[in-house]
Length: 335
Image (cartoon, rainbow, N blue to C red; front, side):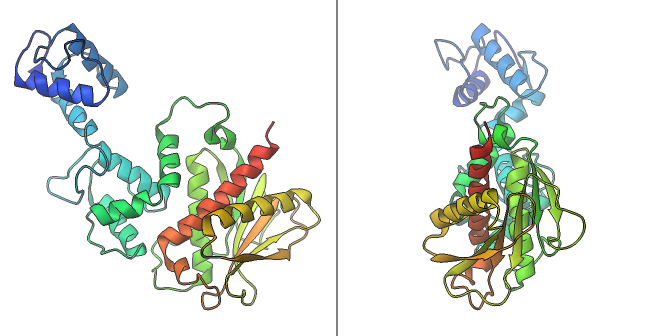
C-alpha cells in the first residue's frame, strides 16, 4: 500500500476522512477523493505529530497509526483477541489503569495479556464481573473517576504546561509518604487487613503525585532515619477503634504548617466523602519536624464506611481527596 499526491479514489477518501476526524486540515474542498497538496501537507503534519518520517506518503507505516488514532475511548468494546487489537483508545485505557495502580506494561496501545490482567483486577475491585471486557459497566466505573483520570491523562500527553498548572506546581517536589507495610498489588478485596489498606492508599497517592512529576520517598513510620521530604503524609491503622462515621487525622498541634496541611486534607476529604464519613478524630503527633499529616484508617468493623474501604473506587476517592488537600497546601506556600 502506497497512496501519494495525485492519487484518486476510495482509499484517498478514507485517508481524508480519518485526517478530518483527527482535526487535520485537508483543504477547502475537504473530502473530495483527490490527494492534492493540502492532503499531502495534512499527512506530513500527522506523520510529524506521530514521530514518523514526514514523507507525505501513506504507506503501511503511516496507515496503521492513522487507523489506531481514530479509535476513541468508549466507541467499541475492548477485550483480548487474537491477533491483539490496538488503538489510541487502548493507550488511553492503559494510561488510566496505570494511574490508579493497575499496571499494564508497556503503555503501547495494544490490548495484550498484561492489559487483560489489569482490566480483570480493576473489575474485581469495583465488584464487576471479572471478564476482561471493557464494555458499558467497566467504562462507567472508569469514568466515575474522571476527575483524577483526566488529570493523569493530561499530565502524560501535555508537552507545554502553563506556569500555574498543577503539573508545574508539583514538578520535582520531594514528598514523603509513610506506610506500615510494603504495598502488595495482589491483595484480595475480601481481606480486611488495615495495614494492606493503608499501603494501598499510600500507593495510590504516590501514583497521582509521580504522574505529575513529584518525587516520592517511602518510609515506615517510627523506623529508620529522619523523614526526608518537603511534606509528609502518613497512612496508618488507628490505635484502638475509631467511632462510627469517623476517620482519624493526626498532626503536630505545635506546628502551624502541620495544622494547615491537616485542615486542607480534612477539607478535601469532606468534599469527597461527605456521605460516607461524618466527622474526623484529631490526634496530636508532635516532633515530626516538617508539615505532616497522618491519616488513620479505622477498624473495618467500627468505621461505618469500612465495607467500602475494601472497594477500589472508594480507596481511590480517599487518595484523591488527600491529594487535593496536599496540592492546595503546596499551592498556598508557592509564591
